[in-house]
Length: 285
Image (tube, rainbow, N blue to C red; front, side, top):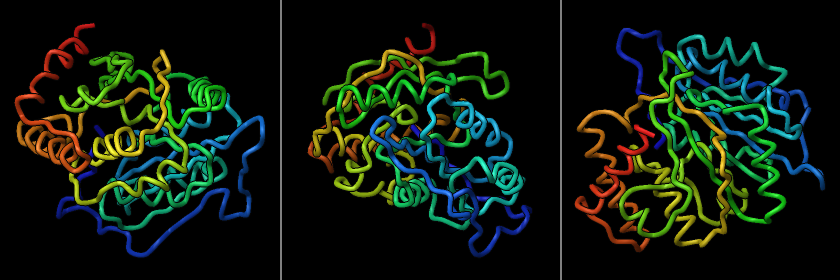
């Protein structure tokens, strides 16, 4: 589940008002798809993420796949995020900094701005597992002619990223898996832009589980064809509102039940408890 970027505290520097933007696209340098290399858009959502954003950007720059469009949506950060965006002005295809309505609103902005055939989300505390990750993702999407792919995700210690604290290792998904609250790991999920155009935007009336609702909508309502890549392509730093605390777990489970109900799939709190053994195994593998 994606992390939520909390609003600044009262003593913080006042948030930027208005809109700032930059990147290659603002200089008239845009990328296009080619028959051999479809354009893949990577969307990074950030708010006061200066501590990790540069690592995320570098992991995109280091990809061996050439035709990558990197779009960064900043929610009006008051830390050094803007300094990092300007530092990598020539490597980022487009960035914008302005107030938004939260992470899912920012994702929707990124999708609207994307020009790639395929889109994936790599937030500011995520990074690609290796330099060939996008090449493998693009190869599977093109060769298999599927709508989407997903793969394994490693969740790592935020202080020592070499230490894996949880291995998201489920390779098959079904309505039952969704009913117990287990979904494809969102940071590894890449799909055709046309899928988002048909399904509609992320629901901004969800606080934590709009990514779960989107995947239920795509998989069950729109029957997208997906393929699993048997490899870890993305790593995520642990922490965040959606993965810590009793209150957060209560909110996310309530939203999962709602997401299933709104997409014609029944579940309840007792069924969601069935995912606990899976989560335990992910931590001891």
